[in-house]
Image (cartoon, rainbow, N blue to C red):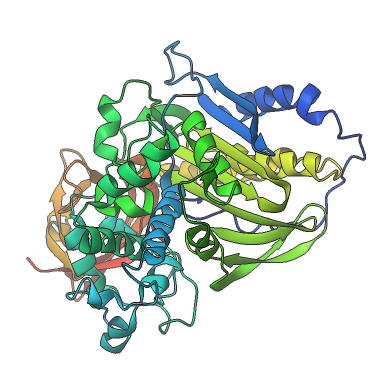
Length: 511
């Protein structure tokens, strides 16, 4: 089962109590030790390909590609190779909307219904009050990732996703809790065509990508398969590193669809660290950059390996915190087969970009902290080693659990009812339709309306419980219990991997 990392969520809690830091001279880490550190980490994490860029004081001090674009091939990653950057897209969307505010074309405190009159939430009063700012700082009251099984990597259009948000039963009251909401960022992004008559992707290309010289960057996932210099996506399937198809998330594009390279992102980061200027030319208004970095919500707190405990806040498309006395502006991105991080330290004019083509690593997260330790003259805390130990422990637990469940399947415990009793049509108000059929062996197959290329394979565990393996490994493995009353199947409890959504779905049997 996939470990929850980040589609869209930074590694916000380090869950650390104490670590024996090594008191070493860090002055030569960047020049003498960094490459050995990265190469060792990439081997340990089994990352096929990566790209790393560090900028400091207005210059690129290190930019390099590592490894290969796809497992089994010898095509090497370079500084222009494309990686999907997932939720690092959000800072582009937020910057675009903040720029339009500086131009007087909108206010971030405008109600979303001014631009999308059809927008509604299950809580009608809340839906009528939602502002563009609310959407971009994740305070609708939704639980983190709520609705994403319905919205992420499905065939729904942007308009259909926005309409279905009215069917999400918010976990919390409006504006009372922070909950990371990809569909909210999509909705904010759709304000751009409403005020400019240009699509989100077209506006970004002409007003951010092109002026910054980000010539290789693409805004939509449909472009990735035909891109020239690109990586393949990878994940772990039963302990084996495997190439997987690109996810198709153009329905959520303003929340996570951009693909970019270390070279292109260096231009983005250098511009942001220079208050929006490239040379003497103002590309992004300084006021727009400042607007995205204003704290809006408290996310939680972090305890670092150096013993510090700090709050983590959210701005607009950025997580905000403090480390070793420095203000940190950062975000992570995670989509099928990819994890990335972008980190800004404005007072040090420092930027760190890490791109990887596997969704099973914490290197993308650890490198930024170990690099910051070097620049901030901190002791070496070995964030990479800490994350690796936790990852191995979690992976061992997942594999052991999977083995126990397969051992149970091998005992041939019969289902309570004939398999044909579980077959039929099911419905969930938010998701839509799902169908269960009897397989060729002692099993069931489950197919979902909005995932036309995906199915789930169900094997009996005894009683009314089945062990479920999704054909898309990102969705993980789980136990689905069917609801049965007086010998009649009434529904089934569906849960996908936390990487996609924490919230379970109850499907009612309708035929």
